[in-house]
Image: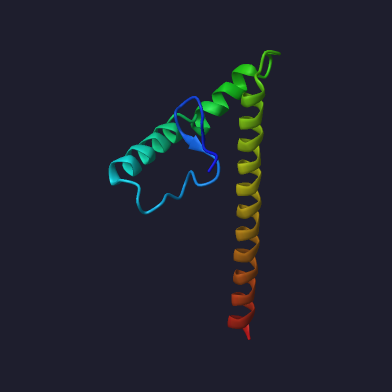
Length: 103
């Protein structure tokens, strides 16, 4: 299998998540630890928002920063859409409840 490692030592490619049953448990644990370290190294949403505010005026924003900000904006938009849907459902349920109790 073709397996590559990135700068943080995390393997990627076919079979990077699943492993064969013959792999020693120590290697599996070490691989999982590398994956977790890479995940913990990712910026938090609040850090991205601060960076977004700091860099809006700057023309030196990296492509990676732009991509992360786009992804964060997509998450916020999805959360707002979900809140609107839940609010609409709640309003419909309340009006239906009032109509049924009034009859």
